[in-house]
Length: 149
Image (cartoon, rainbow, N blue to C red; front, side, top):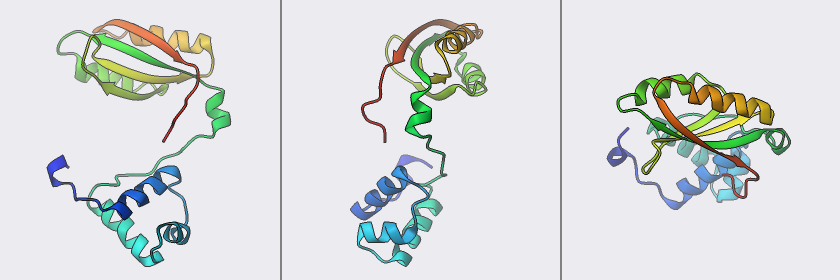
């Protein structure tokens, strides 16, 4: 859906989205109390946001304990011209790639990756660098996450 066709969200809609971002499985009655709305109003808002394409799905949020055991990194990637689509497809197939962003500047992409150990992270970065069309990578290990929403 194009940005221009997205509905205008009121402050309660934005609050609702923030609550669902924290915990998408929160009970509707609990959300209603937090928002000062009726349960049926909250349910109707959720259904409208889904129908209008603002909410497109729900996901799993991993525990801090599990995430704390992972070695995470940002991998900045420079690619050859006209290889973006194929490289994106190949990176999508690597389950350790948590997110992939197109960016402006010296690099073309930033991959957020997670591995169980430094050795696995090293292998993962080598796999990314070996993809045909990847010209250069630069990695930064994430030491800690200060804010996560």
